Amino acid sequence: MSEWWSYRPSDFLLFSARTYHRLFELYNAELWPAHLLALVIGLTVLYTALQGGAQAARVACLLLAACWLWVAWAFHLQRYAAINWAATWFAAAFAIEGGLLFLCGVFGARLHIPAQRGLRGQLGLGLLVFALVVQPWLGLLLFGRPWREAELFGMAPDPTALATLGLLLLLRPLAPFAWMLWPIPLLWCLVGATTQWTLAGG
Image (cartoon, rainbow, N blue to C red; front, top):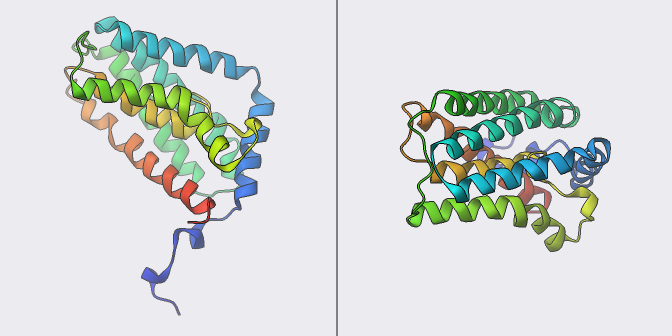
């Protein structure tokens, strides 16, 4: 019997790269033109981040809350669960993050996005732009996947989590419970990166 440390991430993956990418292709085809709404939401989040202020912070949190709740239900529960038993737990985590963002949007009266950004703010804005514009097409360009398999902000978990981290870097000052917003996006970025690396043959 092999020791536990001899296992690789690929030993725990229950699906092939083709199955995973096909999942996104079908997901995108079934939900079009919801992508247009996701695009509007993403651009609105970016606009509020650029504008700054207290109202902008709360609007951005509420919009991201809707995205996390949507991905929890439409992607993880309705589709990803068919090929990955852990997707039910992922859906629960995404729903929790959506709820926390909603609370910040409703009760985070002290939250605001500063008009003047330091290094942290610039990094946050860069992550937000990367998640909205670059990340969805990066895998397609690097691995030659068709555009129908694109993983888009507000529709797919990876860019949604990364955009959220960008917003969290922009927010000031933090609400008393705002630290709770960090673990789930960070952990998902680790899960997503491990999945992509494994599917690529790492």
